[in-house]
Image 1 (cartoon, one colour):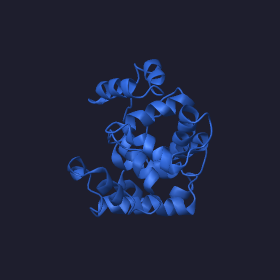
Image 2 (cartoon, rainbow, N blue to C red):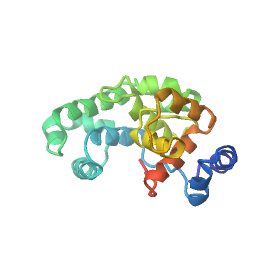
Image 3 (cartoon, rainbow, N blue to C red):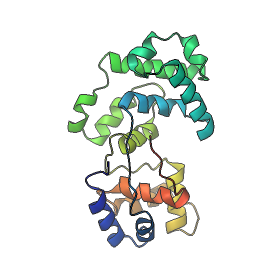
Length: 205
């Protein structure tokens, strides 16, 4: 389902930013999409850390074969050896089990996220071992579809902004942030379109 704000955000960004306008026109009939529940989305993000997309998909499919219902309860009940057999490193096993513990012990509160601002959710998520700010920001964009997230640590966004705004030369973080300020309150939308400059196929988490 297309986010309720998407068309308004796309129109405003196209009018406001000549560097974004061609991308918005080219990908006008596409949009950010969310899939999966919060636990599965976060678990999948941990699985994919520091490995290729292809390797990540392979490990995730083995994880799903071992745990067809990837819930906190299923992870907590699984032996560490069973999770390791999916291709997870010992550290990632620890991370996913810690994530499950946070859900089961009520230290993560999906029911209250609607009333929480982005930074409060990031603080809650980064309390989990193995979840840093970038992962939390990807979750805000792809699962919660928050409209105004600017993931400055994302390599793809950095590359796309260098191409669109500086002739391919890397931009200092301060300049990236300044450009991003001009997109408020639609920084997630601008980021999504800039990712399309590098990869026409939209990513779904």
